[in-house]
Amino acid sequence: MSILITGGAGFIGSHTAVELINCSEKIVIVDNLTNSNMQTIDNIKRITGAEFPFYEYDCCCKKDMTKIFKQNDIESVIHFAGLKAVGESVEQPLKYYENNLQSTLLLCEVMEENDCNRLVFSSSATVYGSPKTVPIKENFPLSATNPYGSTKLMIERILSDICISNPRFSVAALRYFNPIGAHKSAIIGELPNGIPNNLMPYITQVAAGKLKCLNVFGNDYDTHDGTGVRDYIHVVDLAKGHIKALDYAKNHSGYETFNLGTGTGYSVLDIVHAFEKTNKVKIPYKIVDRRPGDIAICYADITKSKKILSWQAELGLEDMCKSSWEFTKKAFNN
Image (cartoon, rainbow, N blue to C red; front, side, top):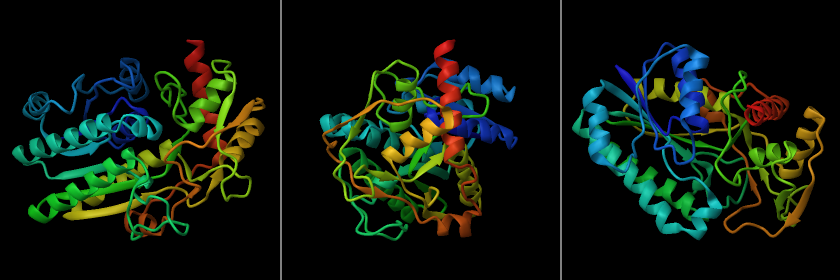
C-alpha cells in the first residue's frame, strides 16, 4: 500500500516525501514540474536512499491519474498540486480557478473510482480572509481576499461535501501559514522558477546576488513596523504535521481542519533582520506599493493541532533563516 503525493516535487511536497520515507512509508509522486524540477526527485532519493515511482503527469488529466491508481496500490493521498501565487492569481484568476479546482475534482473522482478514501489536503490560512482578530482559530469565519484563497476555500467546501455524501471518506484539511526553511542536507528547499513570490526565497536570492534588492510590499499596515505580519513555520515541522494528519485520517472518517503554524507573528522586516543577524549577510530592501490581496496580520492559534494531532512546531526562526541560506548557497554553487 502506497501514499500518493501530488505536487511531490514542490517545496512542501518534497520535504513531506522525505518524512514519509523516514517513517517507513511507501510513496508515489506525481508532479508536472511546472514550478519544480527533476533534480528534486533525485535529491529525495539521495537523502533517503529509497526508490519510488515518479510520474511527470498533470493532475488535470483524468486518464493519467487513473493510470497511476491502476499501476499502484494507493491507500491515501496528500494533495499539494496547484498554483499558489497570490499576486499572479489576482492577475490571472481564470488560470487559478481552472487548474486548482479541476485538478482536485478529477483527483477525487479517481479516488472514489478506486476505493481510496483518505486525503490530506494542502489548504491555506488565506481561507480566513482578513481576520478581525488574531490568533486565528479554525472556527473563525471563512472568506478570501484573492482568487488563490478562493480556490482553497472552494476546494475545502467540495471536500466537506464529499465527506457528507460518502461516510467512508476522510479528509484532513491543513490550513498552514508561511513555510520557510530547508532540509538539513541543504539539497532540497524553496527555489522557484523566475522571480520568487514568497519572502524567504526572495531574501536568499538577494543575499546570493541573483537579485539586487528586496521589494517590501507596503510599510503602512497597522503593525509594529508597518510591514505585514505572518506566522512563519519551518518546512520540516510542516512536513511532520502532514504525517500526523495522515495518521488522524486513517483512524477517523469525515472532514476536519487544522491550523499548522507556530502561533507567533513576525513582520517582513523582522524576518529580514533575523536573516541578517543569523547569516551575517546584509539584505538591501526598498518599500514599494502594497500587493493586491495582501492583509496586515495573520498568525495561528495551534491549540487544536496540539490537542488532536499531538503536533507542534519545534524549529525556531534562526533554524529557518540558516537552513534557507545554506540551501540557496549550495543550489547556486552547483
